[in-house]
Structures are given as C-alpha cells and as structure tokens.
Amino acid sequence: MLQRQQEWLENYQPGLRVAEQGIVVSIGDGICWIKGLPSAAIDDILIFADGSRAIVFDLNREQIGAVLLYETEALTAGTLVYLARYSLSVPVGDSFLGRVIDPLGEPLDGLSRPSHVVRGNLEQPSPPIIAREFVHKPLYTGIKIIDSMIPLGKGQRQLLIGDESTGRSSLAIDTVINQKDKNVLCVYVLIGQKRTTVVNTIDTLHRHGALDYTVCVVAEASALPGLQYIAPFAGCAIADYWMKQGHDTLIVYDDLATHAKTYRELSLLLRRPPGREAFPGDIFFVHSRLLERSTQLNAAHGGGSMTALPIVETQQGEIAAYIPTNLISITDGQVYLDSNLFVSGFRPAIDISKSVSRIGGKAQHTAIRDQADRMKLDYLQFLELENFSRFGQKLEASMEAKIKRGRLLREILKQDRLMPASSAFQLAWLIAYNNGLFDPLKPSQIDEQMERLQIAVDESVLSLNSDLEQWRRFLADVLTPNEDDAS
Image (cartoon, rainbow, N blue to C red; front, side, top):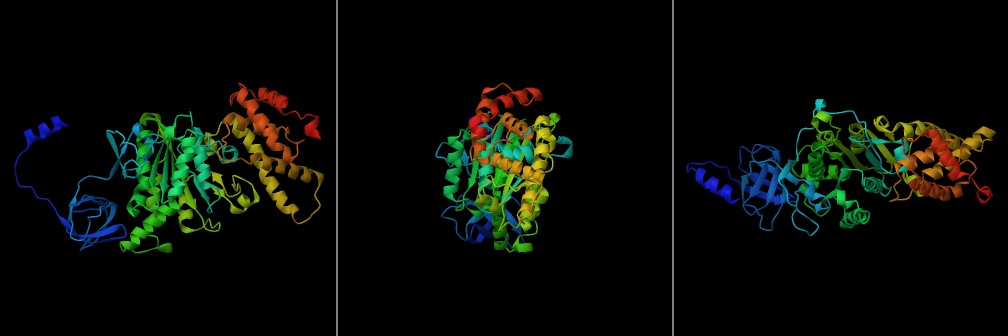
C-alpha cells in the first residue's frame, strides 16, 4: 500500500478536474430521488457525502431514482451525491467458505472480514454458447425420488416449486448436505427470510458439516430492499468465480418469489409502469439473466459447472401464476411439491406427475437409469390404477398385484429429512424392487428392510460400476425374508 501511495505521489499532476455533483431531493422506503449527475447511467454506483451508497435504478428528465444499498442515520434531503465510476461487485474467493455474509460481502457471523484479492461483478454476461458443454455429470441430491425419477446433472437449473410449508427449502438443504466430500462448492442465498429461518438454516448446515464447503449470502426480511434485490446476483458472482476456476458449484436461491416481490416494490416506488400482477415488465429478464449464468463449461474454459436450484412459492397450488410460469419456462425442469401429499404423510411430498427433469436423464449413471426407467413406469401405472380403484370397481388379480407393488414402492420412496441416501444405495433398492425382492413384504415392514439394506450397502465394496449379477446375489442374501418377516 505504501508503495502504491508513493507511486501515486510521484505521478501526481496538478490540473483542472471536472466532477459531477448531485443532491438528494427526497428519501424513504429504501429509495431516494436525486437531482444533478447528468451523466449517470443505470446500475451506476452512487456515493453520498455521509458514506451511504446506492445504485441507479431509474432515470428521467429531471431526477434520478436510486436504490439504497447502505444507509447511515445522517442521510437526509440535501446530502451531496457523487458518481463512483465503478460497477457493483462483491469480494469472492475460498476465504468465504464457511462464512455468512451480506450481499456486499460484509460478514454477518461476528468474525473478521474475509481476506480477498478478487472481486466479482454482480452483473456479467452469461457464458457464450461456444464455452458451454452438454450436461453430462450427475449431481446427486441424496433424495431417492429425485435421484431415481427426476435426476439432476451438474450445470442444470432445476426449480423447486410448491406451496408454503411443503418442504421446498428442506430439499435444497438436504441437497447441499449431500455434497459433502463430493468436491462441490455451495452457495446458499437467503432472500427476505425471517431471522429465525436464517438462523435455523445456518445451524442445520453447521451441524451436518456442510458449512465447511458453503457460503451463505443473507439479506433477511429487515434488510434494505436494495440488498434483497442484489442478493441472488451476489451469490451468483461468488459461484461464477469458482465455476471459472474449474470447480463444480451448487447455488440455491431461497426464494425467487420473494425476490420478485421486492423488485415489484422497488419498481412501484420508483414509479415504473406496472404490468401483469403489478410486476414490472422486465421481471422475466431479471430472472433469466440470473439463471442463464448457470451452466456446464467445456474443458477449454476450465470444465467447471454451476447448478442452480431456484425456489418459488405457489399460492394454493396455482402453478400457472405469473412468476412460477416465468421460472418454469427459464429452467430445465421442476420438482413440484404437493400440499395434499404432505398432509397425507408422503414426504418428501413430490408430485411425480407434475415434476420433470428435461436434461438430467442424460447425466444419470446408466446402471441407475436402466433400473429407474422400469420403476418409474410401474409407479405411474400404480397411481392411475389407485385412482381408478377408488370408484369401487372389482379389479383383476393382476391389477390388484400391481396396486400392492405400487403401495410397497410408495413406502420405499418415503424419506426423512437430513437422511441423504448414497448413489450405491439408490441402485441397490432399485434392483431389489425390480427383481421383486420386496414383494413378500407388507408396507409396515419396508422401513426395517431399507435400514438393513442401507447398512449392508455401506459395508459392501459394490459400486455403480459393479456387475448386475453381483448386485442380484448380494441383494438376495441381504433381503431374503426369514420366517418372522413372512409372518
């Protein structure tokens, strides 16, 4: 630093310098109106005389509308304003792993400020087509129903959608926890959440050792609306840096419905013309330019990836509302959580008939894909037959047998929170189900058998690449019912 100051002093040339100066006209609700600064442009950073900071959000003939990112108590009408002449950025790097920060990179966990030498711009172009690679590597969530029937690939954008309290955030947290020892760096962005929710999320990640490879970007509900607006872009800048360094990354946006509402609030305060449901007309562009930065880079560009799990809330299961529809069209698939399934005790409450992964199947391991295809067909037929049987029709014996197998499968697919399943275990239960090893059991006996199978798989040396016959012999030994099971 002293050397830089010395160089600056040596090169300093006195002369006439022209600088623009504006003045605050009014301030309130996280925005301010400013007069002056004729060369200001959208997304320019403004620095106030009292130390506050803002970003230009709206331009008109007489005034500039700005969104506050940092506000001091001394900020009032009449405060002088200057253009910063640099873009909004956030510090990035490995020193942020295990930390909780706000969207400007300031620590919120009571520890010292992380050291850094690199900053990442919040607004960047998404990687060009020539830098991208097809999604070809699986990203395991540890959730049986997702890894088998709605698989994810690294670089994919998969929407988690459903009503409030149906387990959307739990799926995202389970996925982050399952990345332990898998060389995937994670970013969890909490937007407009209550402080209790933020604390619980961080505590859960910490208790399961997931915070060591995760950075949490938090803009809680009491934060300035401007911080809530830039939070997903700050998290994306951190993940983007790691992706370009060749790392696999996972980013969770929890959630984008709240982000859209914040953007609507800011736009209405700045007198932008409202569109459908009072959202500004460019809300689709805001989310598309964010999610388009998630991809799988090719080897010439480092080979890193950024997998995105945006979360969005629906009202009373209305999947065709404005923001959910936008995000469904931007992403590569969705996992839909149904409140009726949740209430009935089927958890995770994923409605497989409304969920889809458009590109994840290409990345799924061939052994799991071969087994999952047969199982998924059986499950969908079972759901149709079960609905039909509710009318009291007498069914053929073959139909009743399919319903019995389907009910067993439904018990197998149930899974508690924070209990991720390994990929080898996923293949084991799929082979066991397809070979009828669970058929002699009652639904009440499934949990015990799955626990026994989990222990046996953990102790075995079999993997996804092991021969199918080896798996069959192993599973027959483990799951052969004894007399007590048969009774």
